[in-house]
Amino acid sequence: MAEKIVFTGNYNDLSTDRGFQFEFICSRCSTGFRTPFKAWAIGNVSGVMDAASSIFGGLFSQAANLTERARSAGWQQARDAALEESLTAMHEDFIQCPRCSSWVCRQKCWNTKRGLCKNCAPDLGVEMSAAQASHSVQEIWAHAAMAEEDKKLAEGNWNETIRASCPECNTPLATNAKFCPNCGAKLKVAQHCTQCGAKLQPGAKFCAECGTKTGA
Image (tube, helix red, strand yellow):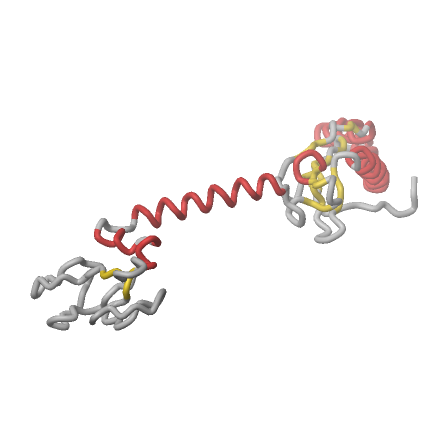
């Protein structure tokens, strides 16, 4: 056995005075692996001696005390050996990320192509799918929250000039309306150049495309 045992922080010690067992857990997905229970022979003998001591006392009590002292040293040594053996066995199932130092399972949480855990280097296909789903949800909420009258302000309508007030009575316009709700004036008068057919801006005296005089 090596003088120093290199261990990780992602395990639980389930050992008892009857034997040894360890549980290793992935820091990312919490998937766990538990080693088989490894019985400790002296622990079983100690259990028998403890029972005899409680019943008969005397010599049995002295023997139980001796067993307890042997157990305290022997148990720790046997436990260290079992831990080292378990760490070696679990090394093929877990790996430490060089970026964040987390211990993760190789099966689900390790990006072999990048050599990093999937917290540091997620699967691009998974991220793309998640991004698409998130965007779709945002689109659904944006569309559902838009009232029918507000749909007139959709992206296609931003290419036209939207008036804030009526040119006739100066009434503020709450929506992108075609007629003034106060005086009935036509708000969208589409004028076109008689020469080239280009759409004229309101009040334009000359066509911005060909320079023809509009007569305004």
